[in-house]
Image 1 (cartoon, rainbow, N blue to C red):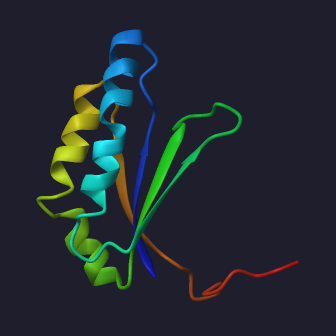
Image 2: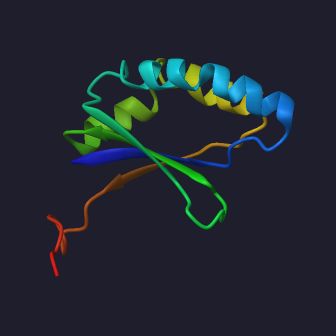
Length: 105
């Protein structure tokens, strides 16, 4: 599996926070339309550290993730995040060959 990871801080001012909340469900639906995307999960930092939001859009292969990161479907989401004052950082990530599956305690 490969992932398009997006890291950003959610808006803290009231106006942008309201706009963010108004659009977040639509952005999730839009991300799931990215060609090759098979799942989406979002995380929030529990301690308030920055970036405070991390999303992981899952793909079967690194090449599909690479194409997804450049897709027309992802651009409106990134532009929307920027419009509410967030500065999304997009990373393409894959599992390490040393831990291709989770290691259990």
